[in-house]
Amino acid sequence: MKDLTTSDADALIAELGAAARAAAAVLAEATAERKHAALVGAADALIGSEQAILDANTLDMDFAEKKGLSPAMLDRLKLDPARIRAMADGLRSVAAQADPVGRVLAEWDRPNGLHIQRVATPLGVIGVIYESRPNVTADAAALALKAGNAVILRGGSESIHSSTAIHQALVTGLRQAGLPEAAIQMVPTTDREAVAAMLRAQAYIDVIVPRGGKGLVGLVQKEARVPVFAHLEGICHVYADGEADLEKARRVVLNAKTRRTGICGAAECLLIDRAFFDKHGPVLLQDLLDAGVEVRADGVLADLPGTVRAEASDFGHEFLDKIIAVKLVDGVDEAMAHIRRYGSGHTEAILTENNATADRFFKGLDSAILIRNASTQFADGGEFGMGAEIGIATGKMHARGPVGAEQLTSFKYLVTGDGTIRT
Picture 1 (cartoon, rainbow, N blue to C red):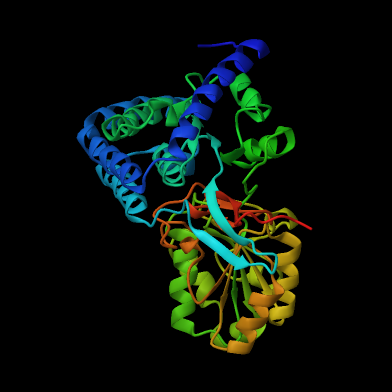
Picture 2: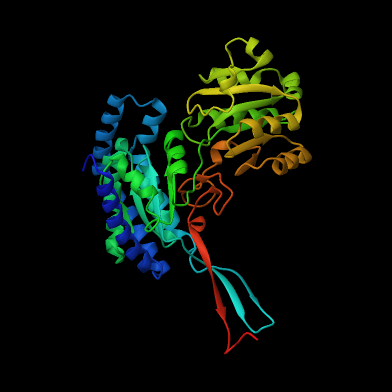
């Protein structure tokens, strides 16, 4: 399906949305056992269709390479047997979690005789718009289903074959568990008009989750009439305090930048306390240089062999590559001031053995995730024990940080009386 008109796109999303609404009504009453069975069945189907998924991914990789996607984007797109197994493991991990629906969040009795409970409920229908990561298909569907939500998935043109093959495995799980296949739907076109239609489909979609680059997320946040869970950029900082342990700092900084450079939890800026530098010299920079990272250094650090002098635009920039901006700071206050100015509210790490300094860092910054003496690459729902995540939310309303199944619920009040009347 190509070159949709606005009315065609609206009609398509209305059709998918109506089916999703009907499926969501069934899911709201589905037992935990049935949702568990659907997820485990989908995991088995993923493994069973490994070769078909790999063949589909080959088509996507060929298209992406011809299109000239960056190495970081190609890495996000690529699937191999290990990554398919990881997707299946993620489905099983989500399946094994406690059902988030029906949790009693609070309850109390009133002097007027009423008993009140606040109970977790599904959000309803979730729209997920993503680009080159085909694993989002499985992760988003699993978390939405676990929380009793129907989901409409709109993958990018780069990952369409892979995502479609993964979607087929997910539908197999639904079918085997006796749940409606419309609980997990894919928009059958990569036409951008379908994205616009999703963003204005407030009659059918309760929340939109964009997963992709700054351009996509910015567009969604600007144009959506539906509530959005999103982060615009992952400009993550690591601050090496004057009282940081040297060996811990070396391990963490290298991992935070180089483990996977193309993910939103990768460190993009290293702030080094002058006291640390005076004590240990340029060891952290040298480790990065030895690992093949381009170090864009500010001030006196730019005089060190192998570094590149930083431009002002390098701070507050999401490289998603083997590039990092580095700056000397005088203490935790200057580090926090820099982060407040240039950060995106995603993840910041402090390396220190001083409890008071760590406490100031945790209290003084308002990013969604704050970490002490560990890599920013842990900013991930799976690493938080959520099984998977549908994204990292940096807003302050409803969901924040890794968005797992629990964050994909709302709540309602259940009020019980005994012929109680209000005087």
